[in-house]
Image (cartoon, rainbow, N blue to C red; front, side):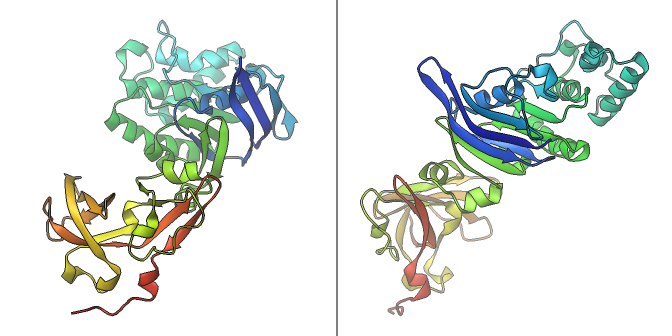
Length: 354
């Protein structure tokens, strides 16, 4: 299903929950609605589902306006955060529920349910009840029930929020494979960046009711278009005055310009580990956090705390140690725009003084 949304607005009393949101979703794509809690993500999802009515704007499925269509006539499947399974029904009957409502012949119901049981890895659990299943298994039942009537659009409201971390990781990969196999257009709400980046074809960043940016996870991470996106996506440090950092004396343009510096844009080490020592400056190791495959290092440079990572293969640093720091690049942003600035000394280094 091709989805088009134009100038969508929603008010709850005096609260403007969704503000003039427009976007297109290509058929078969898996889209992540990502943003902080209360930003409007679920309101958008519920309007697409027909569970809430827009204050203004249009929702089109395959070019047809569906604003006034009830949920059952929109061709959607909905997976709720809390599963919403029928406790008194077996796995088989939960999955079959939508087909029975449509008065599908019994033989077709059985074939479709068993197909989905196989697809979702629930074979052997058909006669169990929700209380006899794990959280991950209950979520799989919810997915299967939503897919049973063969919807053209699948909507998921924080589908992994109620599941523990290990199972959540497994279900992410499983969901990605499932959507690719079924080929259904899908939209899921999440506030988990890792989840959105790992699962989605494209991400839509929603904040305070507005669509801040839409694009692939890589595009959004590498080229944030608004100050909010720049500070929201990924780990980073915000520096109020980047011109204080070596190689960025030219960085400030106008008032209220700040710099966002990501961990991968910072290189740290001992003197003998740099070939461009003149572009580095001194820093002090403030904290070390072991992350399994690497160290997360907090280093202070001219009063600014920067965060980066260091390989376990390199010499282990110590808290309080003076090291060299090279900031390769930074995102600069103000209240209206953002742009990337490279360390000038990398391109035109000064000679190293011995």
